[in-house]
Structure formats: structure tokens, C-alpha cells
Image (cartoon, rainbow over all chains, first blue to last red):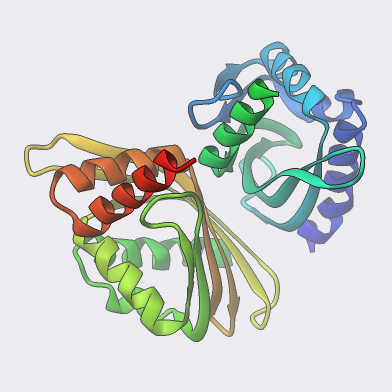
Length: 137
Length: 156
């Protein structure tokens, strides 16, 4: 039930992010949140605090990825909640062809409505190939 | 509550898998289940049905991978259930050297407690590195896969 209520809110956040409006997404993070992106690509690393996370989103924004959210699940009480979101990220060319597609899972640890820990797990090999293609072009 | 019980159950299953016993894990899958592993390693692919999943798990169990189940979240009704299982897995040699460590999330759909779809989300670059380690230890499947990749790479 809670997952169903949260789904429109999450879709709205990702849609805003895709439009370049990062503020609603950043407000979801607590001031001392930890943000983890795995792999050995330029986006990989562990970012501490809302400012560092904002810098990450600003780096990510020029990719103009759109997110389709598929499944969502929540567990735990409001002071120790775990939220999982399964998604597909796509980059579309001007003519509508898909230039990149990858699916992944976001895991958020949430305390009283604020994200304190965020980890995004995706196929890092595919991301690495995408990055190499972008660098070549 | 359901997430709590699922976590206890899944922990037990992974402990058994780490000891090389795949049967409790196999019993979870529906006969027509789909099992997806991402990336471009020898483990990657889409495996359909009991036979293909059993083959994958048998090879996986031989690695004696150790799983630590962290968080679990379950949603949906018993006839259309979705589960997320966050884990860390490690491969440690008899000399206690960690040769592989990865974190990931398993996503599963289940119908009346039988898994119909299973997908693993993890850092696939680390899985490829593990393939190289396995090949160096004489794993034929990893060796053949890396050789195939090398040949394909040389023709591109």
C-alpha cells in the first residue's frame, strides 16, 4: 500500500530530474547523507553530504537520461526504512533512437522521510562502454 | 513483518548455497522461472527453466561464494509478490585471501512463494575481474569465455 502511494511521488522526482530540475530530488537527502555509485567509471565513488551529492547530480544531468520506474518495495519503520526502486535509464537521440539503456536498482535508507544512504546498482560494464562511446564522440 | 521472515529464510538458503547445497535454492524456483544475470562475464545471460538454472547454480556453488544478506523488502499479494534482497558476497581462498567482493540487489517476482523471475543487479566490472581470477585457477568455462571475448575483441 505504501509502495503504491510512494510510486507517483518517486515518478515525479525522476521526471523533474530528467527536466534538469534537481532541487526536488536533492531535498529528499538529509544534510549528511551518503551516496554510493559502484564501478570504475567517472560517476563512481562515495559522496558524503548534500553538497557533494548535488555536485554529482550536476555532473550527471548533461546525460539527459530518462528514468522508467518499474517496481518498488519498502520495509521497516519510519525511523529505519529501506526503499528499493527498480528502474530503466535511457538516453534518446534527437530522432528518438535509444543511444543507451541500462536497468538497475536504487536502495535508499530513509529516516523520517529523509534519505540517509543511497546506493545505485547498475550494470557497470554497460556504463563503462557508454562512457567510452561518449568520450570517443 | 513479511520482509523480516523472508530475510531469515533467504539467509538460510544462501548459507546452504555457500556450502555447495543448491537443492533448497532450486526448490524456490517455479518450473518455468527466468533467471537473469547482467554483464558480459561467463555468468551473464538469461536462463530459462529448471535445467538451465540448475546448471548455473551448480557452477556457482562450486565457487563456495559466501553471502551476507543485508536488507530485504517485499511487496504485493502472494500471487504477485516482489522482493528485493540486498547482499554482499565474497570469495575467500583457503589462505583467507579475499579474491572477490561485490554488493548487489536481487530482484525477484514470486507467485504463491515460487520464484518466477530472478534478476541480479551488481557491479559487473567486478564479476569480470572474478572471471579472470577463475580462469587463472583453471576454470574451463571462464577460460573459454575470456578466449571468446579476446577473439571477438581482436576482430573489432
